[in-house]
Length: 105
Length: 486
Image 1 (cartoon, rainbow over the protein chains, first blue to last red):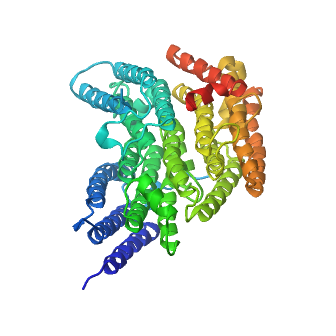
Image 2 (image 1 turned 90 degrees about the vertical axis):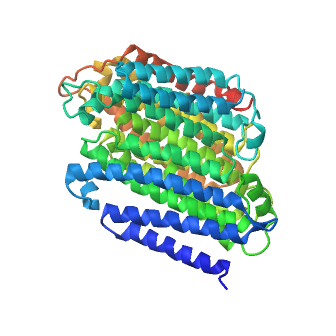
Image 3 (image 1 turned 120 degrees about the vertical axis):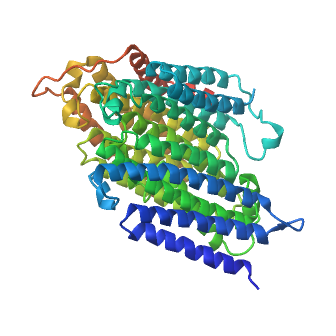
């Protein structure tokens, strides 16, 4: 029997992997993928909580509404984000974090 | 009239302007003027908007109290100011967007004038958001628009770099925020702040998971308001972004972060809340660290824009200190109202600094403090305004900044948060040092004669209004209070 805890452990692991990737990886594209992983972890958490929180015998759809918004926002973020990363690549011919390390102080 | 119609109007106006920009060849300045006109209409209409006039189906998600109306006004005023500064800054945008700036004088300006309207819609909705979904969507509307605006000068290495940094850290904060919201929802089974507040006051069992969710949400919003330890993006992004966008980030984005934070923190610190003491501790520690970091790191700066970035961090610290109080009224203000008042004083002084910076940059004066030496001689009016703005940022009596700091310090005293108060006083003292360093440069004798900075009539009007606002609020703070507590 798969319980709520199983879902929460999986989503927690996804979130941790994403966060570690953002901190540890050097390529901006991989960092961006890890960020998407974090959003997916949040979505999985929301759906799991919604499924196990029954209102009148049905899952609570409030949380699932937020999932749809998260997916949409993530799509918008990717569209804008990739455009910026492409512009960076054109200027520096690299998507390594080193390419964006001039401003300091 | 409902304020929602204003937001729909401004959103529609932004889309129309984007279409006009694409399909009709009009002078780009007209687009900016149309946007400013629309915002002015909305600002006037805001005074006729009744409190609590919300369409029936939206009551759970959207609240129009006096605080929401005040923040909507702040959003409108700051967007107008940003557009005026953007007009002043237009040559620089053109230089770094167009492939051949000499031939296409107006390339890339249209979107730059239309996008702030979309940000403004996000800020205005955020002022009313009382539900996790509404908060999330409006926050993201502004953040995604800001990604575009920060990286707008795509042929400028520093603007691109600022854009990438803002993108990565902004997306990270979104991830933390949504994950925190998911947990908060899971623990309470509620999506509205009112429902969550109700559950928290009758909390049974361990508070650890609740604190985990709250910490994630505070981290997510902490990014937007530039609180330590989530402030790392601020100096770089402030320095690299186009100056009007920096001004917008520093005032608009901060204000909207703080209205959300006000609503969340008021809920968490409510009487009988199960996690009030821990939340207060968390806020006080973050506030102290933010004040210390912002002020001490600012001392060594030589770039004026970067200095303002650190100054913006330190002001976020004072605002957090005000929020960490639970009293119900110091001198007739609740903590949320003190934050709103402080932001209203912060608006004119910050915009003056960025207006001078933008106009100077467009006329070939660099952003280093050294380049502002002798400004008071070459452009006496600008020199005076900038001196006033910096004195106000430092908190000199009889300026707006003093009143803001006074209320924050007073409410911290009332609460007995003496340790934080001490840190705040140290921070304010450091502030005097680095702000007056710039003032000294403005009034010193330059080694070589600088060209005078000229302003357009529109910018001169804006400057006059901002200077008047600093003096009026400093002498007669009730002017803002009457708007806030109506």
